[in-house]
Length: 317
Image 1 (cartoon, rainbow, N blue to C red):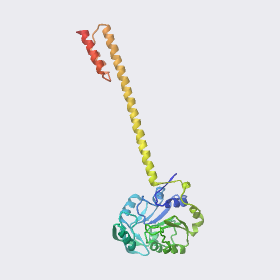
Image 2 (cartoon, rainbow, N blue to C red; image 1 turned 45 degrees about the vertical axis):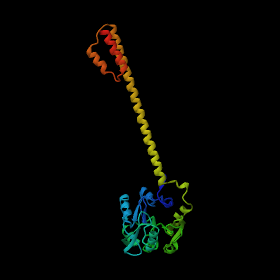
Image 3 (tube, rainbow, N blue to C red; image 1 turned 90 degrees about the vertical axis):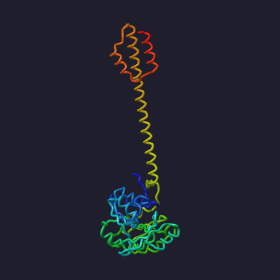
Image 4 (cartoon, rainbow, N blue to C red; image 1 turned 180 degrees about the horizontal axis):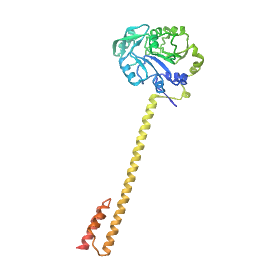
């Protein structure tokens, strides 16, 4: 079955290539944002997976809760410690952040910034409460707070098979992984893939099983289509289906009209024949027969009626 990709950079295609043999897997997404638009997890949800969605932006939280009833969705931040932290909502974007400097840069660029205070928990405590034994991938997209999220993880008790972290500065191709990558390497994770935006790591114990899936970028052999293209195709198919149904109904209406014309012509012929028969016998047309014959006419032909009435007037005047 063709895989529908919702992620902005085909992250879900790479993950699916590595993990599609898992029938009902589990993810953790930190900075989950929208449940559909540019979502790394939407396709996995469609295939029966579920997970933990961590998102501090209230509008996104409401959307995720409505769209993902199987998941655990937490309207909090993940950080190095528990407490309350400032959260800067960059309105109408996916660039909200806990980094005040980054928020100010967005403000200077013309974005509207709303500051909130949100609760924060460590990823270790969240996993202890909600996560199963196997976490198949951990996705982190937190706009500058990557090190805090990783520092709050317990890499001994819960070891995601694959970890992918957005690894460039906001709206930039400049990589920032040197600030946080040592935490993953120290936890016995190995770097396997950089897609221009994210860096992918595999737990050492799963390296032999999963690393071959990252030998090439997304390609034709992954049998995938972008969600936007799939939506466009569905609209075209829907329009063609509706057009076909309209054409079919028009054909049926034309057939019914033709049948009505045929019945009308037959009734007129019967009326003509009965008229000739009665006239040839010199008899009068019984009123009840006239009513029956008139009632049987499906289509009234005005020229015929006028001619018929004139003939009767001449006969009986």
